[in-house]
Length: 97
Image (cartoon, rainbow, N blue to C red):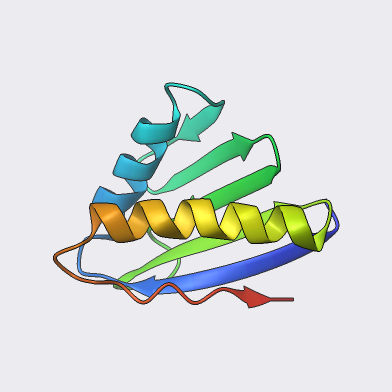
């Protein structure tokens, strides 16, 4: 993986969204899930999730081989989180490093 981005999403329930994202994707993709962390392996890259790194925040990191794949990964994960957290209307802002 060569390109990486990160989104810090403010929420009162980061563990809830961590679980929802991982459980949603585990039906089609390899997923690892603990109480506070998750990893989802997409065809275009990997997304790691951390619900305990920062208080009141779901930390999402995306890694892919190139910018195009990273953009697709960011869009898929961000769109799903926005759908699951529609009551909070989270601001998902990816920052590339």
